Length: 176
Image (cartoon, rainbow, N blue to C red; front, top):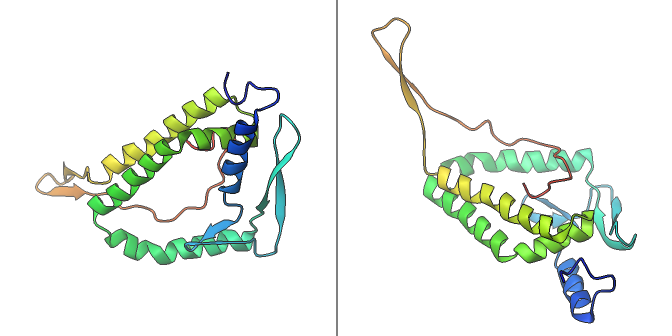
C-alpha cells in the first residue's frame, strides 16, 4: 500500500509527512536568500484530499518579481563567464539531488495538489531528466557555418542566451 492509498496514515507515515513539510521552504528565494513577500502577504496551501492547511507560503508581489528579475540580471554577466563545464556540473548536481529526494518531492506534490503518488513520482523522475539533459548540453555549442548570400564568404552562426526571463507556468506539472 502506498503512502497516499491509506485512509489514515500510520504514525510513521505521519512523521514522514511532517518531516517533509518542515523541510519545505515557505518564503521567496531572491538574490540567493529566502525572504518574505515585500508586502508580507501569504496564502495557505490545502491538501485537497483532506482540506487541511499544510503550509502557509509567501505570496509574491510585482515588486518581488521585479526584485528577482533585477537579481538575475545582475548575476547574468558573471554567470555568462562561468565555464560551460562548471555550469554542466551545477546542473548535474541538481539532477542528482532531485533523484535522491524523489520520494519526498513526490510526496510533497501529492499533498499539495492531490496528484496520485505514483504519478507524482513519475513526474519527479521525468522532470529531473530535463536537468540531466541540459547538464549534458551545457558543454556543447552547436554553431554552424553557412554560405553567405553573395557566395564568396562563409558566416558563423552562434547562439547567445536571451538572459533572465520571468515566466508564469502551469501548476499541473510543476517539476517539469
